[in-house]
Length: 228
Image: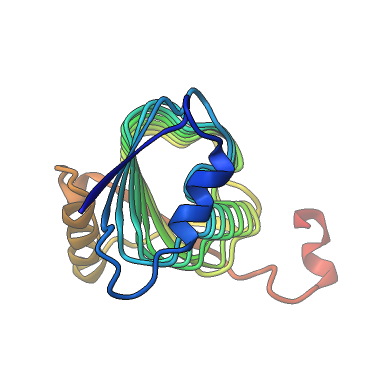
């Protein structure tokens, strides 16, 4: 069953309340949200495997804490897209502002355009695929998951990261503290190919470089004081 919700005719609180009321076996599995007009917190905290399409731009925290839902934004997204996503998929056909996918623990975020600064900050298992460029300090303090950038990365990529894998096809302005280029072997190319296929992106895995943690900042060491 398809449900259309017009944010020009009803408040956002009513939309999120309706989405949170969906339970197992509910037949309202497809949602079409029109006239978002940059509204904040659209479709946050959804826990059921429903399909949600937002027809236009959204503001802060769209899809935050998503669990199981498939969310498609036909436009661009403001700061905090998919913050703390647990599972499911979020796709944005335009650009995303700051800290997309912050602290995400699982699921997949696909940004077809560019992502601003701190994309994937403190990510803890989410996969993020960006079709364009990412801004400075992306994957800052990333702990797990994968960030794939088909364009260029800004300054401080992967600063102070732990165990996330970062793949960049374009140039990297500079690497952050404790981030280094890693070997790109057959295992990583195969994993990246599978992730790109899941994201619906066509690109040659061999054209990417892989970055990860040099593991010098796990424990404080006075010899590395300048890197902290």
